[in-house]
Image 1: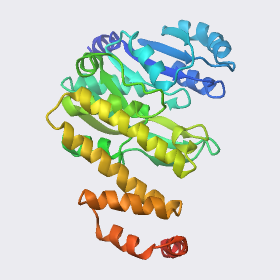
Image 2: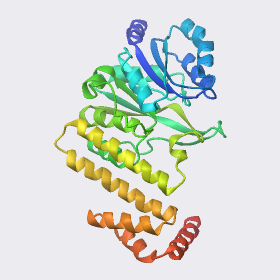
Image 3: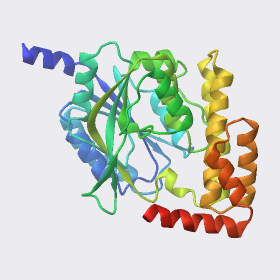
Image 4: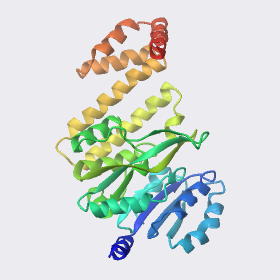
Length: 336
């Protein structure tokens, strides 16, 4: 009876969409994790987004092993247009009953797929499943420095709010798997907004699924997320770069919220703006920028969301000398 149930579950195909640009240094680990999966009814849509390194050559080296494992593998090479374009290319091609989008520079545990399918089977009414990922620095591969979702979402409203605020959310793709019929229902175009930037892909995939669908969180770690210099969030080193990011993020959020076609559109957009302005205020301290401190404080005040802390900092940090002194005192107090 157990064997019958196992075979019935294994009949359900799981699709994995993986975008890749110049990923040769990560591909051995990626394919190792794929070939180690205990679940074999897998379809992989591998989108090579115009790589100019050895990506194509390495993919070909693994194709025989993948075929032997019984995994359907489709290699698609396109011109370089960015991660969102690559994801959209994959979303138009997959055919499995479940969908996961996996980064090429991370690692799926051997039971990543089998455990998630099992949880879907045990909870047939859910649309999206959330598990945890471990954070690991590539420089220290044997050391886990933390986990996603230390504070799980309480309910749908809490989850939506966190996505809008980008606060306490495990945005890494290894956290998520969705039911295909739900994906097609809540993202009917089978594509996300592509503004030509590398931001907001996870936001666009999560928000519609969580806003309209039913989610489940399971406190189990099935994926390793590697932190390295090529990670998108590691590339912002100046106020100008952060400001450009905020402009792009706002566009992505607004487009995603418009596509929800919901009554709360204005309210959701205002929450996004408030979150961005609060983040700008914190960045003004990090980069010791009086101009950004003033402009972000004015925006917070205009929206009636100034806290006592904001007001105190604004009063103290009147010039560059004071903001530097404030940061020094804060570091000393933090160490104590």
